Length: 333
Ligand code: ATP
Image (cartoon, rainbow, N blue to C red; front, side, top):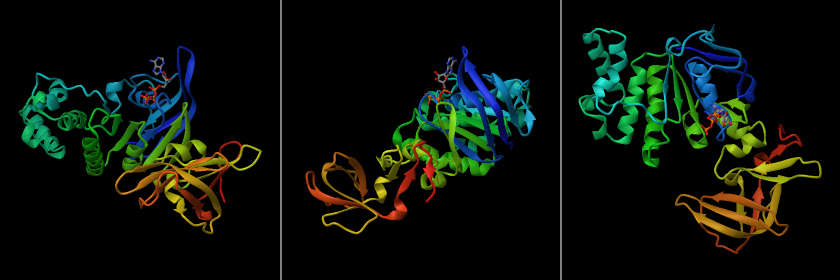
């Protein structure tokens, strides 16, 4: 196991700064998810940890040690990518033990390790198969096993599930959570998918344009977003935001926290409007409500009781409202 620390780290590509003076501490044994929109610098952070693409300035520490001069292969980290590199002509067993053969680990020890790891990732019955006869999820598990065999103290994963179909992704998310529990190793996982981040992370590091917006457990990012960006990045549909006054300050509420009714109720914020669109998803329905003054709000309801063009009252209780200053930062009530 190992902690990871960035101290005043900057990264430039062709003199263009992508990350500037970034400080971050990833605690030992956590499942940390780096999340943010495309191009925000998530992969760049991961590659700096791995040493594949070192920082321009600042220090990266693994387990308290400055790794600037340590080669990628000697950092005790293993990386799993979206396009996992497995050798098609080798069996699953040969793929997993490849690194061990290179490191001259004796045959008996190799066999024992491959079988233990094969068991851990659910591939015990597939060790003598060729990758082409496996499903996408099984192939992804071969890639994980290849990383595990190195016994790394840090696992770095860059969108490892994005080539899998939606159902398999959900299953693999659960398997990765289980694997993390079993190994107790530090996991650093990169994704642009906020659902993936929310469901797997014990710590979310939310980034935008190379800058950390918030670093907190998922429920804290959801309940206490630090700013407008965090408020709107986490949650589907995103938080509704509307102006408060003249000075660019705003208020917001989550679609799942608004109440729709045919009659006006007593709420801290209420508005009269019409249902503009209705999206029935089975267990919930998402309505878009347009108000007389041209505003539009998304509302998520457990019941499917309103129809398009119907007049409704939208209400939000005081404790479900968020307030943001002119600088975009959330104001604590
Ligand atoms: P995605 O989710 O799309 O993978 P990301 O958050 O991982 O995005 P990075 O790959 O870290 O983003 O890229 C951050 C920025 O750095 C982007 O603007 C990208 O264009 C730039 N960048 C990354 N690698 C290079 C490179 N080798 N040369 C020049 N610019 C680069």
